[in-house]
Image (cartoon, rainbow, N blue to C red):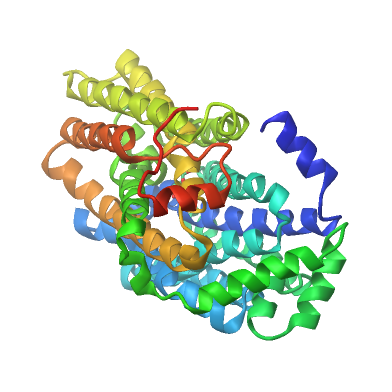
Length: 461
Ligand code: BGC
């Protein structure tokens, strides 16, 4: 995080409440990350208890993604109708029910049902977490808080790995999956103490309450901000989903959808969800594989912090191009290593290091930059609906990869699978170079004006 970002955050601009909000955001991101990451270790032991075909294996892992696509699709509407705070409470309850169902599952269908329920909660969280933060944060620190959300997703994934590692000896996959109940309870209790988003209150005609919450959470005068909200709300009420297909908005839609799909089809979650299974073939043994997976989770966290530190200095494009370029190279190496005969020992170490570097390159590029860009490139009036569509595409592609990964490795082999991800990364690199605009240092209005003039800049300034 840049020094000025840290100073901005510490100087507040919003009083103590901003930090409480960030803590809440952290919990949302944490749950999203924890519940998507936990399957990687649990899966090794589920396989021992239940006999499954490779397709069913894929469904167990990817059931949560199917649920998340549904959760993201309806999450935006529910957040508008019920309020952000109520949806967060509902998602915490659904997280709890999903985790409990998985923990007690007597057979594969119930396990899949639990993953689906849990996934719906993940989908809700992926929409309502950033939405709530961006609406409640003072504009000055909204960017930093947006990136913090991705950081907490990675922390959640890392926590799930620690839980997996701690419980590996006892092979207690039920406890691993049930552990999600703990943060869910904390989130449910935490959200009861949070106020509703002032913006949502304003949209629902509760101007006095909106003003009171802004006064409670801002250090200065709130009238100017209320005026801005009023302007946005009146614009939004005249804007529908169809406006997204307006010619001037198409480039932004293409960039968002493209990055959403590329973030997934380049294979990050094959590694995040299946790392211990991949590393098993290195003959390291279950516990060592899970430990190496903890290393992968740690690198994901650390490199996300590095990305946050660099993102406002070197810009989004430079990070994306470096990150995706690095993914192309590491995927090429991974395919080659798994292709070589007599795979073990030294090659196992090269494979592990390459997997770690692959994650590092994802974490400085496609990981945080995707979520940041989709919160920057859409005009305020259509930002919610555009982000909703793009997020569903992201979960859909996630589902495809996690469903197909075991099938691909079983039928095409591990080397070809990594090389396919490598080719997708190469296409992502060309796509980024040709189409992704630089948004660093630009006001959202300037980005919107560029779009209107259809000259979204690709300068590296
Ligand atoms: C992606 C997730 C992924 C995570 C890994 C997020 O940006 O959307 O699919 O599991 O990064 O850190």
